[in-house]
Image 1: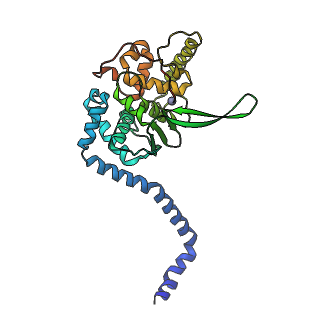
Image 2: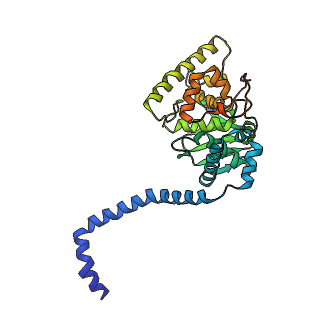
Image 3: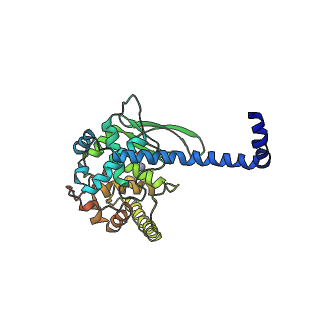
Length: 305
Ligand SMILES: [Zn+2]
């Protein structure tokens, strides 16, 4: 009976539409592969939004990140929401024997989330892993000289941001960056500013800007400030920003982000145009936050990022 049924019913259909059915099956499978993970993520995010923010995490923010206490209530709320998503979706990996704790996860996720609190996409879609070292870590580099001979060199780094979806951080420097909210130095803000910059596909100090007008202003005013910084350094004149910002436009944007969030009054005072650009991009106005802000930065410090 089943054999008769197959030959009478399915076989003619298969003969007539076999190729189309196969193509349809492949299409359904392909769409499922793309959309099912998105559907799962959406469902997970709905569940997360219903969960309350853990009291222990709130205590970590209050005790370890003074800037959190200065944030407006609505920004705090948004940051807390994003922390839950960040920790659920990004893998944290301890390196050199480090065991990753909740304090590490929360402090890193929180500071990264502040940058995206008001952005149209308020997370880091390409980010998959955060690697945490106990302290600065060694990076082996092969550098060719003028005649093409490659020399091996070791450099020490506090952090790195990779376009393949990884951020690498020294925990000692992460903790120190969070502990002082008004010195214009913050490792997590620096590396995640690089992640935003990298979202456009190139690393050039040009994060995804919402309007053509802002893109034009950004391009012109950032370039002018970057060129002026280069000239100041060549003439050994004092600079308003850590000279590390002169390395390239990507570092300029990352160091500027540290100043924007941690010394906003100073930045608004000495570079009002750049402050306005950053304010328009991040959709935040840190100079209005009640944080003790020094007028003079101590900027000449060696960096390894
Ligand atoms: Zn950097």
